[in-house]
Length: 406
Image 1: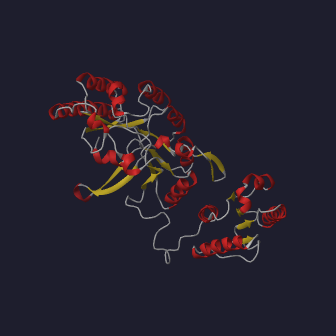
Image 2 (image 1 turned 45 degrees about the vertical axis):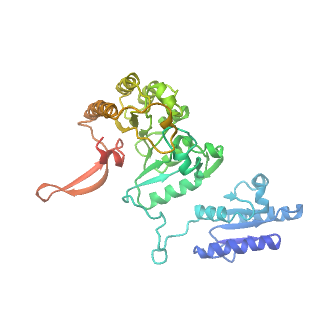
Image 3 (image 1 turned 30 degrees about the horizontal axis):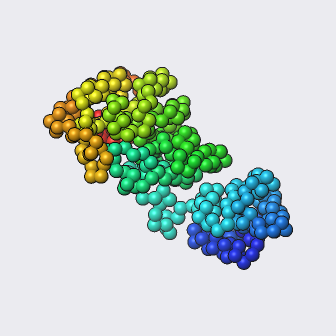
């Protein structure tokens, strides 16, 4: 690692701290440009002469090495640097230690040393080696009347796209062949940050749902999207779907189909014409698998509203469906909205719903008999007569789909 430190003693201290962090991570400091794999220039931007000196130092580093990261006071004016030196790998402002270290790791990852590192580079995982969950955000901005997640986990807080992609890439390098993208509201990703620009692998992105899907698809492993609210912009992800990338699979928590129930639930995007959009999605991707979950027995749910749900289910022809009997959660606004549905009626509606959903799923699965499908092997188990049986999943099956059998 090459290092050029300019400016005042405060900048010098910043350089000392950065070098200390780099050394603690196993990087060596090179004596010159020629022996460095990457050069950091810690700039000064206080007066014109210091700015000129910093710009000249950046140019020198680019000329003699070519791989340059810029930090320090002049980094607070990235446009001034990029106008003069557009080929720098990245620009950060003063005392942005973590951002500098992240940029270094992105462009010059430290090799994992199994003799020194107690934790593998992809972190500790509780899933099997071949798939992993990739959380892209915390919290939720929705105020669904049956849910208290926002009060437990706070408002939506999206992770920077570059950070998500670094984790995803580390997982793929560790042998993961399926990324299961999760959050409370995946399709709202980036809205809390106002969709800032991002760069990864020398490509430009915005921190938003569709761009993240495009970036993840470039890793060429199965990418499965979960908890996708059906906002209008979700339509654009269909054209990104392929067999090696973003899978033709969407997990969309519809929760109900009656407009009046959805209004009481305060569901986002409840007014969208979901049936028409499902037809459009399938016209583009006939192999699209749709998974969803629903609630029956929501406070005030009438028989007519439940029948509306059954009729919608018959038209939507969803592949994978789960159902929950409404249960009052302490602190949920829905508890005070209307009289609770009697337990025996809720049980009856649950039975009727699952019977219809199961029949639809079975019929849709029967169409696949005789097809050749690429599968991901989850386990190899003992069979009859000392044989071995491989249990796998197709693109249309998430790990929990196989476990639930729905």
